[in-house]
Length: 253
Image 1 (tube, one colour):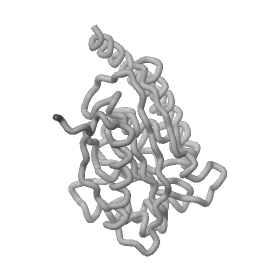
Image 2 (cartoon, one colour):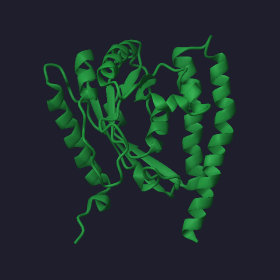
Image 3 (cartoon, rainbow, N blue to C red):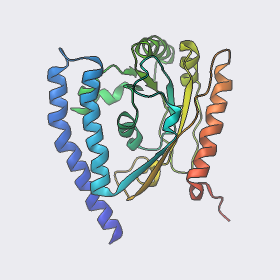
Image 4 (cartoon, rainbow, N blue to C red):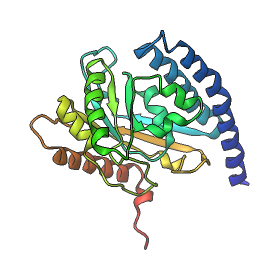
């Protein structure tokens, strides 16, 4: 009976997303020729906030954030950081624009642009969409556009593992985020997220519970090598994940 309840609530939640994204995305596409930058971003962030609250009200997915003092405030227009979060589910991709005080520029695979309505809307924003099959070209695009968007006041957000990992698992940490941070002279902020507790990877079944988001202190990059900074990001995130969600990493007897 409990699982049936989760299924019904999850179905209602995704129906809610489908019903709300169509008019929202249509409006974004219509106004995008004349509304650009931060104002258009805030319109899209409004839908994402609605989605996160929908998950809370319909499916019981709550969240708790610690470490917000480790990112610059909205009043500090000159400060830039590069966010490097753990990636376990869709939840954090929706939640960070609501949680962070500055506009975010996501680096994502171009296939997301093909999703009706949602993809059309994010295609109108100042984001970096890449072709993963062309690595050299993709990195050049990330470096050029990433530095430009950060100079305009946005924060770049890159998932260092590249893709979602299952709860209790660890992917391969790549140096793309730290390479960009070093080339831009921007600190890296590591973030641990336990979203797979409630929204497992590759699943449409949401479960009620509490997601912890822990924001680490900015890691300086000046004068350092990408691999060195990447190891520091990995060490902090993985240690924090084990602190926040110890049962997921418990070794079977």
